[in-house]
Length: 586
Image (cartoon, rainbow, N blue to C red; front, side, top):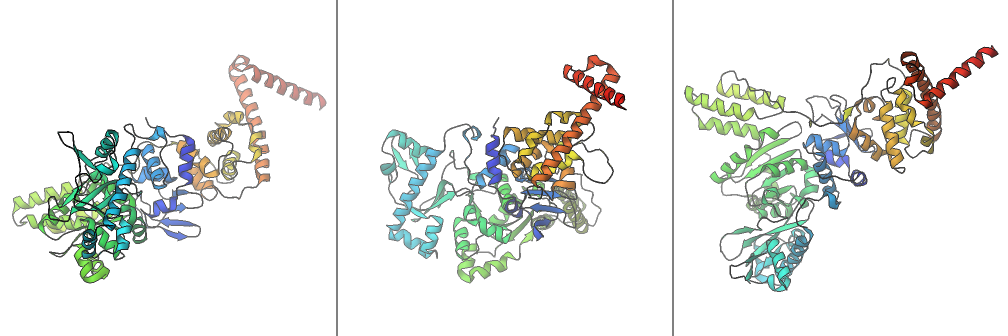
């Protein structure tokens, strides 16, 4: 099982920005120091979901969902802990430690040879006027060539092999990278020849492979890298690394069909477009898109092939729709694509078409409606069966209700959709802090100590707290066990910061009550002073001593002296003598 050290997790959290992470998925509005929105984990009309950039936590006052960046990804994206940490590390540009890497070949040599090939392709473009003319004919400027790293592969069977494959090990590495193929006779030849080159990068901008478009009419017109240790066609989204800022700014991502469409749109200032990598949209690509933006617009050509592609894509969507996720479908006029629209009418022409995008479920019901004659009972039954099965996959209760009503209006009959059993949160969760009903008033000493511990974890007075005695308060104060856990973490990592300590506690405990009552306004702040910590430790030590005395007395009364440890018997003897001497004095 993959494991990460606590130090690595702390580093990932320290370099992650929970505001940016959540704001790219949920529309947040600033109110005071925090940011608010309707909760992505339950249905509500008034915002109760808050994000604190200062404390790097989120909390919903409605359903009490809460946590840090890792917890949000686990809940929102339904990721495992390892997947969430890995994704945050990737977005922060932090390489995974060796123990966190997937088993298998080391990808670094493959990436290094891909980068060497990219350099050669770019140099070849700048020394090959016909290839430059091709890009200019497509309306692309030299600045755009450089921005996307476009290149050219000459019509030479061993352009790369002769330069990067000096020995058998290097030639095999070229094969592993998908740059070169090996014939049955053992000779090597370049995969990309007489083609303009598109580097294919992942969401972090790491080079994974290439695509080539023929310039002399040879087939196939487009040729992608084969599947390799780095390139996985079903996970690749062309242009995502360069579109992230535009997507964040526009709060939407547009998926188009071609690489040139992406480049033309970006050059026109519409830098929120990406493309699938030579394949139909996959589950993985859809999830990546929703991690990037709350709204996806699927843009297809208006011909039969485009409509068939849209139908296939929509089969992936219903089970993944939920609060904060919007999916729209856009069909371009027949004979047009984004590249042609922008070249004819500029960015405004595409923006005008983009405004016509329809909600995906509306489109799906319309297509189904056109397939059947609803005046015929058997066809109406077929229509209802298909529509109900499709809508039953939608996990968002409000969305299902709205489209169930829409289906009733279309069919003219009552419709009951099967209930969904989807869960809003992952099954695994931190254990809850058992909170007993208590009278309103001041927080307990353990609760106050927890608040101060999270504010000032490096205060030296914590070393004076008799934390071994907290066990005697467990039955009296339900926060004692959490405090003991926090002090144990502190003893192992004496220089730990507030956010890292909070993250470790939140990973072990469901801190809902602490968020709501005390910690949401306090974690990581400088409110607690050194004198407050000193006074709290002194008062808590006294309370712990008294709790221990009560425990010893109750145990001796109930089970006799034999039930006590030698240390506890000595303590009882000392207490008894003290009481006797007081009685004699009086």
